[in-house]
Length: 214
Ligand code: AP5
Ligand code: MG
Image: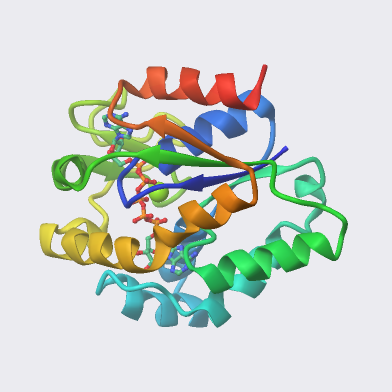
């Protein structure tokens, strides 16, 4: 099963993608997590990506598309995957569609997690992230067992550099201008499904499993 998560920054794409990956035993592929791992390891890609991410801007398509096409060609992705944060522009969606088409494959579901902008900024300021494994928590809505420590891998949780309110505002603007058009793109492709992302995390996931099937 090949699934794409759509939604604004902070809508809960990562939170739900992790649950989907566990339930359906497919890899969770997050371009944001890949860039953050590269930044942490000081790679050339990380240096380039950071300059865009810190401003709330998108990393250029040419640094992003090949990376994802390469990742979904790995053996562990043969039975499917959940893509989180990609595609984010129409050219990225077209690159993905064409890469899949060349292999006789297609996306099965594009799940749009809907959350209004006014809920986003408060969610982001309470988010805590594990840069080691990509797990995400919230100081009110999704707390780790031990404060400040990742339940999954035991590393320290941090506030992401791009979660400052002014950067979140910019990311929302970029989302509306460049990423929201993908909703129509996947609607036309006949694979769009929408869920109300303002509900409790587990209720959102129940709605998603109804769409994806048991
Ligand atoms: P990325 O890491 O993808 O960030 P994003 O899309 O801005 O989304 P977030 O990760 O911030 O939010 P999310 O939807 O995953 O929400 P989460 O589950 O954490 O990208 C970062 C940057 O990298 C981009 O700005 C760009 O520069 C670059 N980039 C990445 N991909 C790119 C691409 N394809 N092309 C170009 N550039 C790219 O949830 C948020 C918070 O809310 C958490 O604290 C969570 O616990 C909480 N929460 C989640 N669900 C609920 C709920 N139902 N109720 C209450 N709280 C909830
Ligand atoms: Mg995320």
